[in-house]
Length: 268
Image (cartoon, rainbow, N blue to C red; front, side):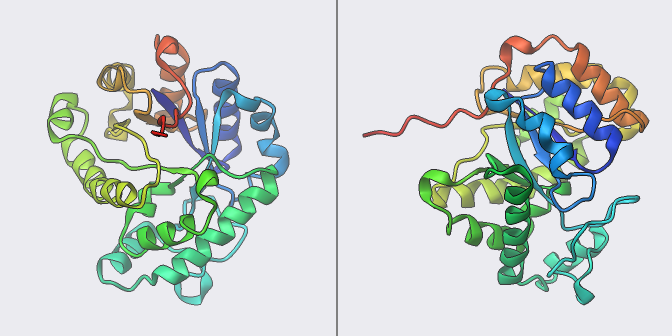
């Protein structure tokens, strides 16, 4: 099971929480928002010093977040500016997002990641899962297929089995909304021969963060036995729901089940 901390670079308190958990072996992957000002080379250095203990990935940032302004403009939005999540979703649903423009934006953020870390990312996903939306999805695949085959990152999909979602009982509607485009993404990745995770968990109603320890127990149980099952987390120190995740990850009894992404053995 991969335990991935998202949103590194969104805020200093999130960075501190993620670094502490990574150093303690509580997370095995970290997704970096390379386009944000709190994801400098200096900020990322402690993660690089962990060497082969964690996967380090690119968290594509195509939307605005309160209090976090990207250091560069977007090629996707009118006027070259990042936009609210709802606006971007509307554009993808109405066919207004050009995959070639998406590919150019993804290329720019990929190169920014390489510039700041001195290495290529182990994986790529998207802030608020936008990498799976129509137009953006095709742009990402177009970009990834230009990379050397043995150097392609694995790509996150958020697909979860319908019965698994029912059994988790953490937020049925939210999980279905996130899982549905993940199913499309999973099939596209498989058809292109791009590596992806096997199973996904971590979705719940943030308003119920007091129940996170119990939710986390269910997530871990659901992914048990899947080497590449991916548990998404959003630890932080300031916001109550992020603090609940930080505390939960810090104290959970799952260390014997965590690992980095395990590439499948290919037939010779």
